[in-house]
Length: 501
Image (tube, rainbow, N blue to C red; front, side, top):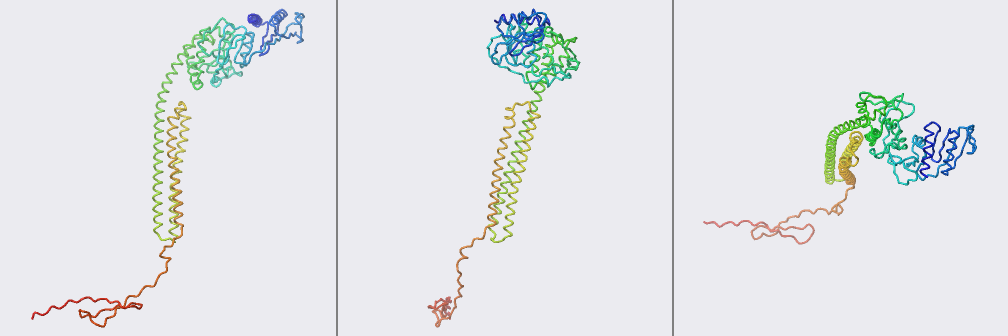
């Protein structure tokens, strides 16, 4: 069946190439229009041999039978129904139908083509035989050439996606004798050359800005002009330019400039690219490596500056944390002094109590002000780090940036937050204690609750009736309230020494 189907496709393609038929293919039908009587009879026979149902229409768009075909009712139109295709597979009979299928966005990642000789794989589509069930996963490009190439034409000529036109491996050996491959290669060459130009002028000319400025035009049969080596060079150039989305614009500019500088005389894009595509790619790669080297030096300097900035920020945040701790300690000791002073002053003095409360509020507010100002500094540094990330250090991967910047900064902020919470808690407790002590009522002492007794009068001294042994009268203390008198001996007097006479 495959050989007979390929023979039918080859015959229909011959009619299409000779402008004797117009071929259109959809996912479920093959439509051949503008057929003369002989070609209509022949195609009906081929379809009957394949067992495909079809509908024959004459010039009046009326259904007709094969035996009624005649030159009087030319041209004829035949619509044949294709067999059911597997999932994610498009069935393509002719190369003319393949060309029409390729001008639209691919409807399936696998295309079974009747006339293909050897399968080949692009980033978006696998082209293979009918009945091939090999698995395939597309790997589309993310770079969009339309965002890089300027177009001044009314109809967009630069493709938005190069995935159907780029081989998975640009060094793949292609069977250049396969007409199916040549059909795809012709459209691929046009798409890739347009995507490598600097801009497309209104007249359709491709501009490559050097200096000097190079203008080329797209001619027919570019794949034939390029040949197998030239087509491979164009594939390599497009791969190098658009494989990395972030570097696509930079690489595109380098390649276009090298193309303008190294291109030989000529106006046809195919012939010029055949000779200049490979040298331009080599020059663009050298220029890119030189730029990368300079960028690497700049990147190293930027990373050194970043490390110094992060170290300075961590040091400033550590100083802020220490200042906050010092402020909290100072306020705490000052609060203890205020509490001690309040406890030494008699209670009941409203002026002293108000002064103590005001001092407690001031000390707590001082700690709160230090916490707020320090937190504003933290927020400011956090915003600056976000600006650094987006504008100065986009070349750093997220993991490396987290290790170099985000991680150390978060650790320093974590220490500050702990200190801020502790300081705030101390300020709150200090304010509560000061207010409670300043506003409490005086507590009466036990001596003030006891009943006081009147003071006793001093003892009265009375002289005794007789002298004491020393010749002095005894002094008798009369108690204040009855009882026997107390005898208080008087001081002895020295005896006189006898006269020596």
